Length: 205
Image 1 (tube, rainbow, N blue to C red):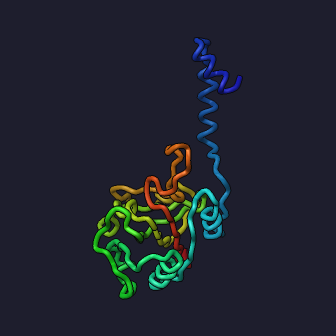
Image 2 (spheres, one colour):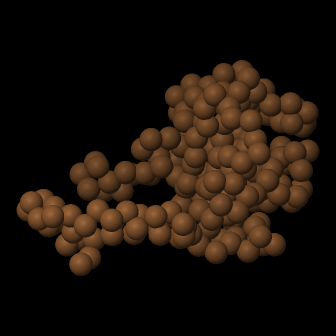
Image 3 (cartoon, one colour):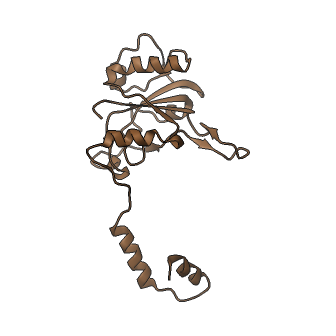
């Protein structure tokens, strides 16, 4: 009997073989099914995931935080954007040279560019894991039209993102650009957040 038959049988009032169902559940827990990720090639696996069309992300690896302003300037020029942006008060960002930019002290809805630093990227899914803190407010990451995210490290699997790390007050996961088809059945990108996602992995990630 399949699991489907067992469920339908239970709905019809047939006796349920609970011992068999418990054994099946235990087998599923004992053998976690997940895609294989080569631990020696996390960076390439992560970049391959980001390149999937469904994620709608662009990627531009950078050497270090000092190289970030030049990479941001290049991105802005590509998209014909003014050199105005919001930076969270992360010391790694503030130490870079932003003299050629109009750095906003706060964000407003439809802010053109918002920069963030992820806790990590996940090779399994191409996800970005961000967390809140004094140097990383959450709201700006949902207000900007262009979300530029620096990735300092890459882990293999989703659960690895939370391992061996103090838990923040809140964290959130981004896998590609937000979108919806709720509006007249048409795909709308950026419905619940930024319309563009640009990922900047550090060379040492």
